[in-house]
Image (cartoon, rainbow, N blue to C red; front, side, top):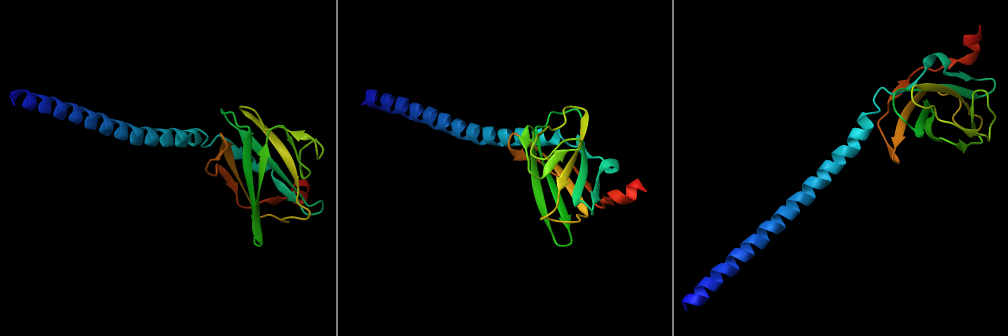
Length: 169
C-alpha cells in the first residue's frame, strides 16, 4: 500500500510537469504571433516620410489628358507603390511595380509599353499617366509604398493638382 501511494505521487508530479509544459507552449505560441505582427508593422513605419510626391513636377494636362507625377524615395528600397487618384466623380488606384510595362504609364522621357523603373534609394522619377478613358481631371493624388506584398499607409498626398498648361505660362 505504501508503494502505491509513492507511485501516485510520481504520476501526479509527471502530470503537473506535462500541464506546465503545455501551458508554456500555448503562451509562447500567442506571444510569438503578437511579436511577428509587430515586426510586420515596423516595416511600414520605416517608410514614413521616405516616399513622397514632388509638387513641383506633378500636374495634369487637360489637353492631352495626361497626369504627370513625380515620386521621390528617401533612404529606403521600394520596388512597388500604389498611386491613388480622385476627383468629385470617383477614385481609382494604380499599382506601379519596378520593371513592369504599362499601356497607360510611362517614364517622363519614355514611351508607353516600355518597362518603367521605380526610383532607387535617395532618387526621384517623374511618370506620365494617360488618363483618357478613365478618371479625368483628378484633383488629388496619394501615394503608398508596398513592402513584401503588403500595402503600407499613405505616405504623401497632394490635394490640389496644378494644370500643366498654367505652369508653362
